[in-house]
Length: 27
Image 1 (cartoon, rainbow, N blue to C red):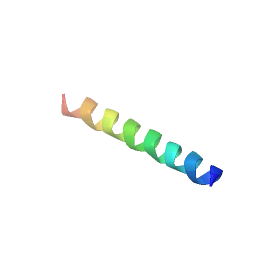
Image 2: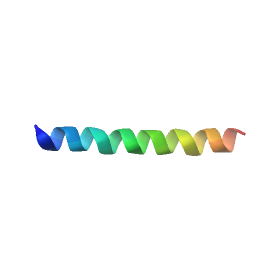
Image 3: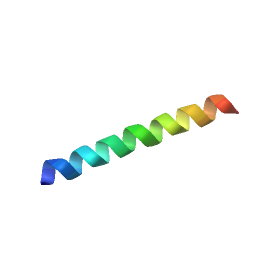
Image 4: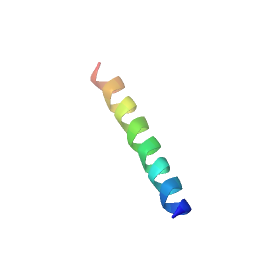
């Protein structure tokens, strides 16, 4: 179960960074 939590955190970081880049280009 530990690797599941780590993978979820990695996915969340990727999603957050993708959203940041997207919002940056939308400005």
